[in-house]
Amino acid sequence: GQRVYHGTIVGMPSRIPAAGAVPEIASDDSTILVVGDSVTFGYGLAYNDTFVAAWQRRLKLEGRPEKVISFGSFGNNIIDNVSGILTLVDRFEELGVSIAAVVYQFNFNDLLPVTREDLHKMNEARGLLDRLQSGSWFASLRHKFLNHSVFLRVASVKAASLFANSDAKCEDLGLAAMREYSYAFVAKGMQEAGERAWAAFDRNLRTLANKKHFPFAIMISPMSEMIHPSLEEHQLARPPRMDCATIDPAQRLKEIARGLGLPVCDPTEYLRENFRRFQEERNTTALYHENDGNRP
Image (cartoon, rainbow, N blue to C red; front, side, top):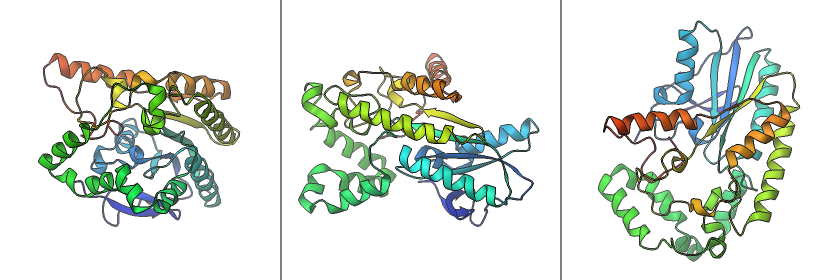
């Protein structure tokens, strides 16, 4: 229900703070480019509440000159983000703008072996009956309209939960066990596909790490299940089966980054500690959106 304003910076789509408020970039600026998915975009948040805006405020308080420029798109994965980062770096360098750092916001669904455009084409190519059965049409409808009503939002989740199968074996569920997180967590029954996805992720990350003329860092966006796995704070109809995971993807990411000499910012413990304090004070607050255990 938040107003969102779209603009372009150096010809690339970006969310802007207000109508017409496109950040001015000058050749003597020092910029930090943040590239990611809907978390970077600030799904469900006012611009001022996004982590990018908070980071910019902190830099100003410290008297730092860097401008934080955000490029987040819904559904982006590692393939989309590598392409986007390389394009952005080229365009900023063509303008003579200094790049202080590039930060890649990593989400645990980024290991999908296809691009966002591929997913869109695959969905459009499916028959109407198949799309109706998959529920993707309803998810789109819910996010556009139903989520504005608390009653309809909760009712839709409770109805969907009737069809959830929480007792089935992970191997029998396949991709349905952890959905888009199945590759990052190398879900049981999908070990081969998961390891291939991690190998491709390693290659893509290496492509960025080899661009030595700018500092590159990774920021992890933890899922709600990693912050408070025992608390049903959100109302997911079909939460991912965390018992189907065979690896800790955050540790795997850190191992890869360590081998490439890349710093990693992992706010999981920070968020977990904040949530614990809310619990102690008996003022539990929603850290993630309803129906959504992925976007803080």
